Image (cartoon, rainbow, N blue to C red; front, top):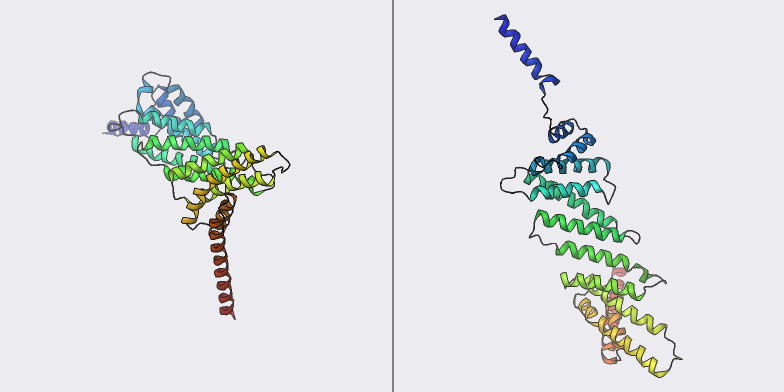
Length: 310
């Protein structure tokens, strides 16, 4: 009886001691051992060795744990790095995992959740990078976001996200137009292309239609304001014809903005001036009168509001 009790004590001791924790000799097992101890740098070292092993790299769990380890390292050490290689390696690993048979892959559901998380961080970093110094990085990060989302769901519709990003990018690039610096022709074409892409995705987008109309209108107005009227008649006609072409480009977007009642006063001013530039005085006066009526209504409303306050 005493002997049996002694054996049970030994078994219990082994079970609850480090001697009872048998770790496999392969790199994946060693990586998981360090991962469980939260020693992620060591776990990373051995998981990277695992994918060099033909037997281990054919296992879905190898890629799952590689993605998990890199994702955790990104969260802990590299979250503020918008171009984090750790994040991209995590995405690459989960993507590799999903290339295995999904129906028989016990790790797929968890991997998809982590890919969604990583995609969200990409989208946020792309948005935070939309400034004159970093916008090219923002474009690259947003493309990583799109690719990641399409890996999670190949049939996903990203039109809304695409339109929002392109609109934000175009608006950022368009800021010099609000200063004396203005835009050069290359910048104008780049911004116009983005606004058109937004409109292709969302034809009734009021901001894109209005901004594109104003972009073209300002381009023509700048040419007219800087025109040398001492030039010969042939050159003068050539410049005027070019301005007419630009006004015609602006017109459909200004009319769409009018239809959508977006920034109505500014849109009416633009329409009146565009038709003036096209030498259509009747339509120019039509929108000018509508603007005057709108301003009169606003004035009456202000008077009524003041009366109510008395």
